[in-house]
Amino acid sequence: MDIPKMMRAIDPEAPGGPEVLQVVERPVPELRDGEVLVRVAAAGVNRPDVLQRQGGYPPPPGASSIPGLEIAGEIVAVGEGVGAEMIGQPVCALLAGGGYAEYASVPAGQCLPVPDGLSMAEAAALPETLFTVWTNLFERAYAIEGDTVLVHGGTSGIGTMAISLARIFGLTIIVTAGSDAKCAAALGLGADHAINYASEDFVERVHAITGGAGVAAVLDMVGGDYLPRNLKCLADDGRHVSIAVQRGAKAEIPIFEIMRRRLTLTGSTLRARDGAFKALVADELHRTVWPHVEAGRLRPVMDRSFPLAQAPDAHRRMEEGSHIGKIVLTLED
Image 1 (cartoon, one colour):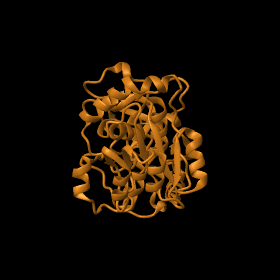
Image 2 (tube, one colour):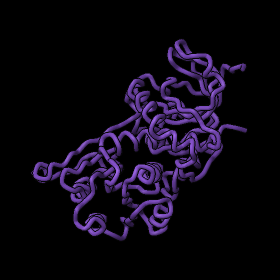
Image 3 (cartoon, helix red, strand yellow):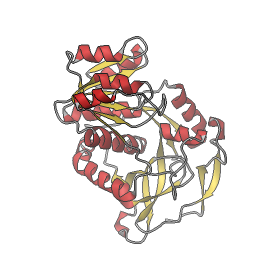
Image 4 (cartoon, one colour):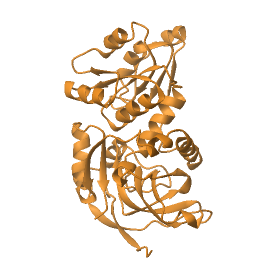
């Protein structure tokens, strides 16, 4: 396959509103050892992309300035150390950046095969939320079959993925959402309980749902004043995992209560982790979760797809908060 030297991409020169997401020409990435070049068919849109566009979440050193943390497409070239048999394979992949473009380079170890029956748009909607929920809810929070967990943002990409994984791996999942309609949508997707945080006190509702026992783990993307409230939702020996700070990066916590009840506070960010860690996670997902994808038991919840040139509209939809599930950009004709 002839690979062009230039490609369409979205690569704003300065932070700003959605209007800065204009299609420009950029050089096709040059491959480093261990990387593959993917002709992108679709790219997922995620909250960190919005933060990057606004100037609040710069790419890690060495990563592309082009937004986009997940893609799906076909491998068209391989770097040194990667077998030529990978050329032509349909894959989805987790990136540190570079997804909003016709071509993207990615370490081969961060790719997962796209099984028959999964569209490229669906495949592009899997990696970022799947890697995030798996590493935080199942690895950092040690959630196991039979546990009850609380996940905020139940109709977001993270929330809908958490619901799907909870159903597969035997968790009871309580989610929060901002309206009765979103709560109904979360219940329709398989959540065991959904709390409208706009009209209900989620701490009181969690206590009522669990009979006062509390939950084994909380997956929190809100931060700020939610953190001490989340701690009240935890059972003794419970685990709290922070993955975003939408309501602020600081919180006041009751230290003695943490000591007395043996609570664990942890958190993580994924984007800046090295390729070796991401490859280990990809391998674990391929062994543990991917059979459910191949069997059709795990599918991303899709909200809307937009052509690359309509990336501003995709970001506006994410910022207005009305979406349920994943927003995707498409690059295929």
